[in-house]
Amino acid sequence: MRRLADRDRLFAFMKALGRAAPQPGQVYLTGGASAVLFGWRDTTVDIDIKLVPDHDDILRAIPRLKEQLEINVELASPDDFIPVPSNWADRSPFIAQEGALTFRHFDLASQALAKIERGHTQDVADVREMLERGLVNRQQLRDDFARIAPHLYRYPAIHPASFHAGLEEALEV
Image (cartoon, rainbow, N blue to C red; front, top):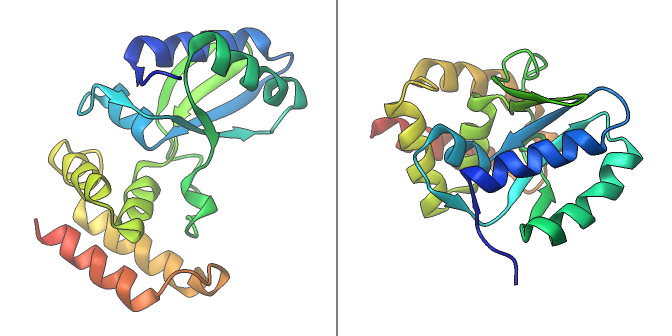
């Protein structure tokens, strides 16, 4: 049985993954991992990441690290679920450099929009925390939604009107 990932386990994972990387790359943390590192959650069930590029050596190291650290790791990020702005990488805050890998939070506005689209109770609470902490702002989320809305057809599971209504509801808080 794997354990919840707290701040220490997240940093242990980053260090170990950095040691496994033979060449430079970017690792974008998202979801609960960002929430833990920003401090509004103590733990997360899994560490969601996006690798750029997705080196085979790093991908091969992940199953071993999952067992060693007793954590769950998933390859998942907002761009798997919603369109994201083309400059998302430039807007991704730096976390740490470990070996050849640079760790960043996946663009926070894209994370918030993906959470709004999903609409789970924890996701709505996370967006509220992001707004209260000034990590994202209402206008930025509206502007980003307007930028990605023309591309929602690429994600057939999304109902654009419901997504927009969820956005406005999340921003009322």
